[in-house]
Image (cartoon, rainbow, N blue to C red):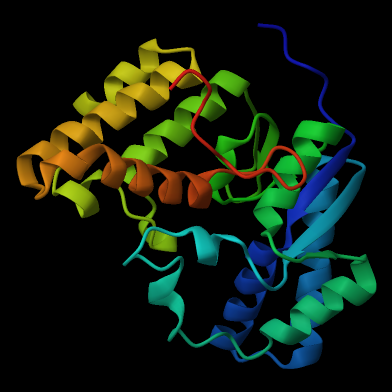
Length: 252
């Protein structure tokens, strides 16, 4: 497969940068001035490494995922009591004032990165593995690695996440829901599939089989499993166009 040319404009995951800089600052006892200088240097180093221009995205308020999460598994629910680093708000303000960072309302910075990649051809600069669910060029500044994710690879990654869940964001997977680990053997059939509908039907079948072994009210199993899958999918899916809300693929 011939790859498209690398983009000149890259979207930067401002959330990750803000937390990384402010946590490091707090650990090392830096004052606010040094923290903001470090923020500027870090952002410029990322932009210089991956492209000619960088657009920074930050997550704002009213993230839709809080309403879509699977019942009993609130999105990011285990983070609510974690203290935030002292200068986090200052770093975010600095990114907005000095770098024109774009604050996203009702969605995450991740969604904006994915949308820009899919609709405008921007690259994605982040160390967040979740963005591997978005096709396009990626830059991981921790590994200093530029790589390309095809649409097929992005779709496979998403359906693997549907099996594994995402503990970081408190998104349950197979183990949390039916007590069965999403082993390499269970995920392996996805590597032979190319159609998202086929991938979904396989994942759904795995959950239905797991529910059969542990669930009550077996006559409701399809309704229950579909409710789980819709909640998990909407929390895991990186939007590829504005306002998109993930739903079951056609033909399911």
